[in-house]
Image 1 (spheres, rainbow, N blue to C red):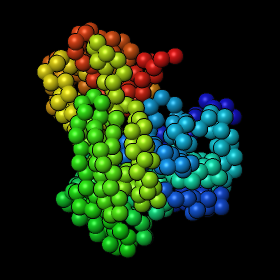
Image 2 (cartoon, rainbow, N blue to C red):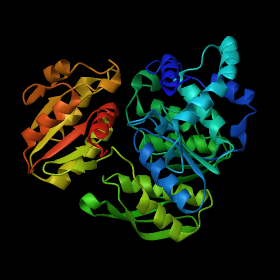
Image 3 (tube, helix red, strand yellow):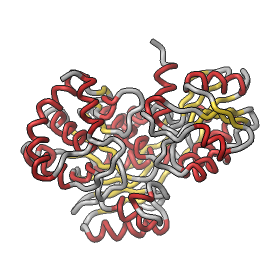
Image 4 (cartoon, helix red, strand yellow):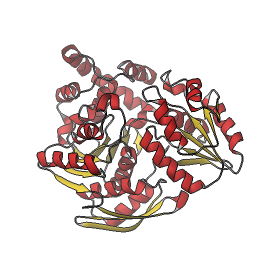
Length: 423
């Protein structure tokens, strides 16, 4: 099997199909000898901020001397980014070898329970590959929590960053329904950490109590102070039960990033990191591409992969604070699983002077046609294909002293990142 053949097989398992539940994942792992049962780390759910929190936590744990795996979702450029050991993606050779070794088990489970989905296969592959290689696992939940393939894992620490409306088709139409889905990652005896507020927080609190766990809440058990450094990130101080770290540098841009960093710092303490220098070093070294990431100047080109209403509004507010009244052109695309009226309304809150709609090739036909998006958006928009030409058009519209925001889809952000990255 070649790498391309391996990707083709996983894609055929239903990249854009949903077959929710943990039964097949658990069956596959059990047939492999349940290597996950001995693994420790953090499972991270939430509407937004999962990846940033995971990146911060992984970086801190590495700085403290641990061998760490991070399983983010989705990838930006290469599928191998979904399985990272010490910040290095799995090699294509090891990816193929791991899938090849797993195939007999997948066949047996498929005969009993039906074929595994893409995300069930990926979760099983990651655990099979990682178990003998790592100390700690940091895993981002793919969708919701209760029925996501990753919820077959019990790592001892559960993080729920926040809850907002997203994926209502699968998770429910209200904050309460979505919060219950996400809170279900909290297992018996877990230490749970959350930035949830209001109704969502009450549901998380009830879940922790029912599982006889401990709960650390941002603003209560975990305190945070932060100061913006503009495009250079933030200075952050975090304290909690048994720890305090003052005046740490965080390079991630976004008014919401200090909260994600605070959850990561607290989780690192739960996982045994006591050394202030390691926390400080790990936070300063954190990189998370595609989130208010500046990749060029004159005009400034910013990538942001936030693809739901809440993420776009928050990122947009930070961006406007940073650029003030400077001219802004947006390059935008989105997948068909979301409501264009809702997402384009969020785009309007950024107040772009012009919008260039396009379609990423990597979405494999699952993007909403840019003509449809332009129709919904109305005046001030145009359609340009492919994405590379759309970026050039937006640069022209912004002018050398302006800004270009590439947003709406991680597929679009990854495509632009791949064509602009130095060779």
